[in-house]
Image (cartoon, rainbow, N blue to C red):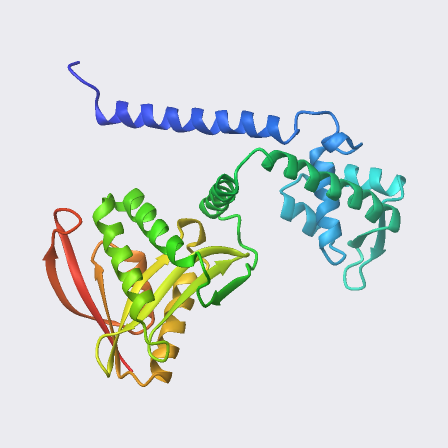
Amino acid sequence: MFGQTSLDMDAKQAGARIEAVRRFNRDYTRRIGVLREGLLDSPFSLTQARVLYELAHREEPTATALGQELGLDGGYLSRILSAFARRGLVARRPSKTDGRQSHLRLTPRGRQAFGKLDAASAADVRLLLAPLSAADQDRLVSAMRTIEGVFGAAKTPRSLRIRAPRPGDMGWVIHRHGEVYDQEWGWGEGFEALVADIVVKFMAERDPRRERAWIAELDGQRVGSIFLVARSKTVAKLRLLLVEPSARGFGVGQRLVEECIRFARRAGYREIVLWTQSILDPARHIYAKAGFQLVGQEPNHEFGQGLTSETWSLKL
C-alpha cells in the first residue's frame, strides 16, 4: 500500500526487458529487410535463404540433420526442399547406411542462386554499416557477439590467435580495462589510471628477454590481453589479464595464461605470482585451473569498500 513490493519491482523489470527485446526485434527486422516479401529482392523467403545457406556450407546433410540444425518442422522443410528440387536447385543421393534418408546437395544452378543471394547479403550489410564510424562498427559487432554468447548460439569453433602487441594495442588495453571493470564492478578512473601506469612503465622499461605482453584475437578482433613482468631474477608477475565479455567461454583466458607460463619457464623464472580481487571469480577459476594457489589475502579499499585482495603463486 505504501510502496512497491519486491514482486512488483521484479514484474516491472521483467516487463521492461520484454519490451526492450521486442523493440529491438522490430527495429532490426526492419533494417535487414525481413519484412519484405522476397529477401534481398530475391524470390526466396528468409527461411528458404537460410536453407540454401546451410546446404552451401554443409557436406551433403540429410533433411533430418538440416531440420534439427534450423529448428524447422519436418513437413515445412520437406515442402521447401521439394520446391527447390522442382526448380533444379537441389539434388538428392540415397544414403548407403539408411534407406530412409537421402543426402542433399546444391546443384550448379543452386550454387549460382546462392552465390547471388550471398553477394546481395554482403552488399546489404555494407550499406547498413556504411553510415557508422569504425569504432561504432566494432561496438555493434561486439554487441552481436555478446548476444550470441548469452544465448549459447556461438558453439562452432572460433579462430583464436595469441600474438605479440602491435602499435595501438597498448592504448586498447588501457581503454578496455577502464571500460570493462567500470561497467562490471564500478571501479572508475582510479583503476584505469593504475592500468595506464603499468602499461606505460612496461613500454618504457621492459626487458624483452624476460618480460612480454600478449594480445588475444578471436575471429580477427582483439578480445584479451596479458602481461608478464619481472619481480626479481627468479620471480615473475602476471598482470593485466583481460577477456572481453563477448569472448568469455571460448578458452581465451586459459590460452593467455598458458602462454605466460610457457614463456616464464623458457626465461628461467622459478615462480609466477599475481595479485587479484576475491570477487573476480572467472579470473580466479582460470588461475586455479592453471595450477596457481592462493597464498595470501588482505582487505583492500582502493577501488571500493569491502574488497579483498588476493595473492596467488605458481611454482615452476
